[in-house]
Amino acid sequence: MSQGRPAPRSRIGLIPVALVGALVAAGLWGAWVTKSVLGTGDTPTIAKVQLSGIVGEYVQAQARSAATPEQVTTETRAFMGEVQKNLERRGAAGQIVLVGEAVLAGNVPDITAEVRREVYTKIKMPQPANASAGDVMGAMRAAMNGQGTPQGAAPAPMQGAAYGGQASAAVN
Image (tube, rainbow, N blue to C red; front, top):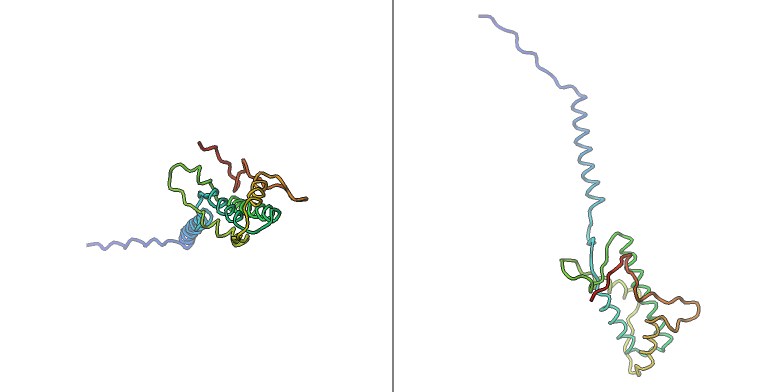
């Protein structure tokens, strides 16, 4: 019987092992970066807010307050400006904010409570008083319609305004 030579063992070189390791590491890093960039975190991409509820709540509080018509006008403009800034910040961060009344169907997260809380941390809610509401309501209407603007102040955009960088269609 003849004894054959054992087959030579083939060795894998260091270079192919390093290349495979580098490819695996690059793939894992790429997956992590993609997840970090595209991940939405806690903020929903599309959300709705009930602006009529927030504004109505504030208008009713102003109507019951003891503020002078000039104070009502100034405070209402500040409130509307803060609502506008809040929604613009959300739009700049990539969040699409829809007016709740325009959302007919679907599972869109409602951020009304969050917007209300953020705005009221910067603008104080008017305190009720036992004053006649006639003059205050007139001042509120003037402020909401852009009339009676104090000197040097620009009227706050109300009708047809797009909040959060988003336009909305008319709802019947």
